[in-house]
Length: 464
Image 1 (cartoon, rainbow, N blue to C red):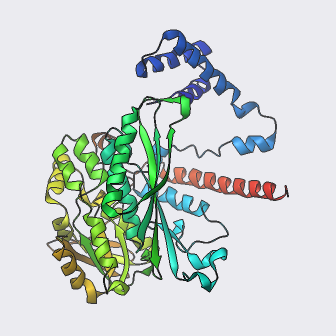
Image 2 (cartoon, rainbow, N blue to C red; image 1 turned 60 degrees about the horizontal axis):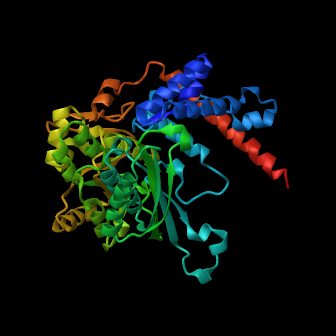
Image 3 (cartoon, rainbow, N blue to C red; image 1 turned 120 degrees about the horizontal axis):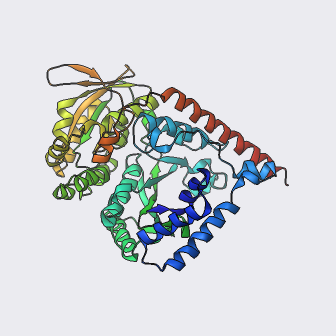
């Protein structure tokens, strides 16, 4: 895929001549499209003209200039590891969560760094009356992004992103009621790619009996981006009564259960791009969602503190985030965890050199009181869902891993999640030497964005 607008702006900034830039854009068109040269030149000139005219460096009005300008951190998304589910990503998402805060507080906010967010219906002014009969109803919502490396495999892409969105509602104790689709395709993507993606989405909708209610289909960058990439996300809404299984509910002494991890989008990506295509079928199930249904419909739901999925940065990353939110510590038994990883998936991960503790396994974590631990394990086993107690919660504020020989080791998230494709392994997982300076610049950029918001809100309010 080629971002013609981004390319043009970058070449202008580097001082390339107009003719050199047009020639480069024309070449990009020929690389992606079967197009007449005169038409490619016509398009290239139009793009160059638009990029020139939209340049804000010559804007005189300071309000307009600030409105359109970016408070750059001078740190790229890739260098900071945003989206790579490690310490670098967590740092940025904490700032994003803070920027999302407004005077109207939700019941479960982005600052909790939980799987989904929620509002309590009674906190919505128009629903405050008892006559509605839903005083304790909680509305949970989730937005799940498409796994970027599955763009060329749209059915499996749609399947896994939809399953993941519903998964994040279930772990908060909410029953999904609605699926919404936002999909963007490059200008050269075949229309069949859209249909195959929607087929994957609707497969999960059919299996879980949750309807698709709305959506949006757009081209990436309109006419300014060429290629056949597919990006976007799935939003979902769910309802919970009275109780939300949030991470903040976790208590010292709680037991930690885990179900079998066969993987989702990440394991699928690892399998495809390492040439282990047969492993993909191990991810084709809805056992996670079925396990949640069993727990939510049980008579011991009040003994469940919280649930979450092993995704962001693997078990290592998830436990780190959970400890941060719940102000607790955990001790995990490595052998118990390893035994719950799908053996075919584990064999592949070991073969390609991926640390299974740092990658998404699509396993369910259940934090519960000791009294119901065995009951949950038994109920899931009867439905052919493997589950075991893998550890317990303590007050250490650390994540400890105890190995078979009783060796105990603290584990921390790396700067990026486990490198599960060849290109990720080449880029590496190590923390940049300039991390402190990068974080300072990023924090300053976030603060400027917050101040910009305040200024624009004040401006709009003063219009009345």
